[in-house]
Image 1 (cartoon, rainbow, N blue to C red):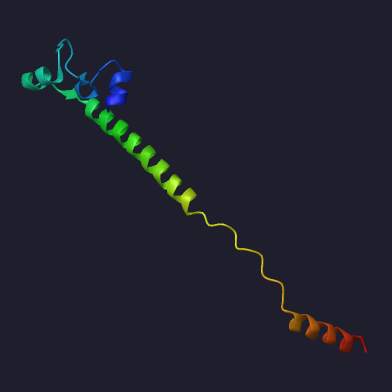
Image 2: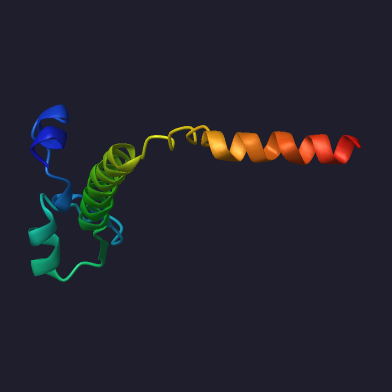
Length: 98
């Protein structure tokens, strides 16, 4: 999360919340929890989603790199048939022509 933290100016998402009690304001999530106020703490969920997306992207790139490294070269062209097989093929063709 250091990259995300520096991009957002050091903001920590785990302290984000929505106060469900009308008319009451709290400075932090801990203060709201100590006062027993009903809150929706969506910051920890947001943290988890961002962590998941970062890890999923890194895993995707890792698997993509492994698949690219594992690609095999196409098999070489088959070797030309030996002279004896060529000769037998010519004899077969002459017998068919008769």
